[in-house]
Amino acid sequence: MNRVLNTDFLAAYEKMAREVHEHQMDQRLKTAVESYAQGERGTPAREFFDSLYLEDDQTTERA
Picture 1 (spheres, rainbow, N blue to C red):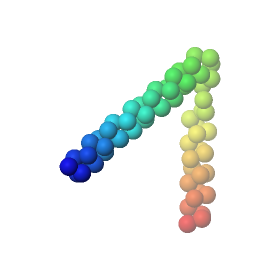
Picture 2: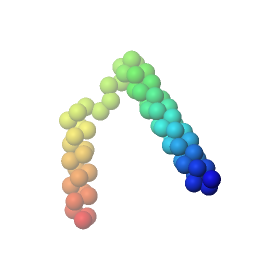
Picture 3: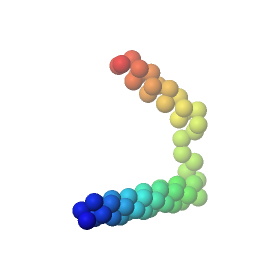
Picture 4: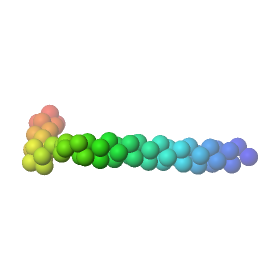
């Protein structure tokens, strides 16, 4: 009986976690679409990838 309750609890928790994640992603998408509609285009690709490169260099130097 205890194992069944644990399984049911785990399934309910996983379902709730998925729903929360989906809601968060929906909110992020909504915010991004609204920003785009207002003319905000975010970070240019070159700037974004350069920042990843610099971040990776800094992390590698510490290792």
